Length: 251
Image (tube, rainbow, N blue to C red; front, side, top):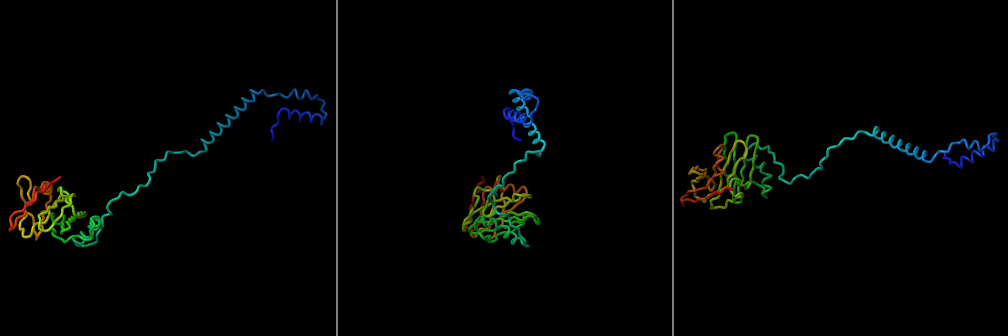
């Protein structure tokens, strides 16, 4: 319905009075109609507006579902670069397992196959086996435990020569630890042709003899003796041509 102002309402009343010929004077009718005061109307309008706002706010508070602070969901991050997952093996022989396990390490080193096998020993019979592979390119150690394995290609983590080479006709060395339980370590390298004995020297004058097979030697140990491999002082090769010594430095 359209709202009527005072003048329009008065005009309608006058028209109705003429049409109906009321006996009551028109001035009396108009005078009887109370006129709203401006301040009263303004106060009433403000009160109505406040009431509407409060009613709306209350409705929103009641009708709106409760909100809870959701924990921030981390954005998926890119996988950190690294080596591929360690390969598994269904091989039934130690050499077959080492070949399978070494696949990832060989690929990282730019190789496709293991060097020739030089030694296969059991530092702990039935519990821990070590296979040593080597040629002119370098060496690879394959540790096989009951449920664990480690393949290290071209490494030597107990000496300052971290990636040693094994050129023919020279005395060389690589020494590494198993790093798992039980403790174990080896020292390995090449000797000049004709060498028949290789001594591994430790601090305090302690000397242990390594295995020699052709141009290669190996000494492996477990327990407390394995811990001492990080203190090897030198390798001595003895043959018909005399003695050759190689000092071993540790970082």
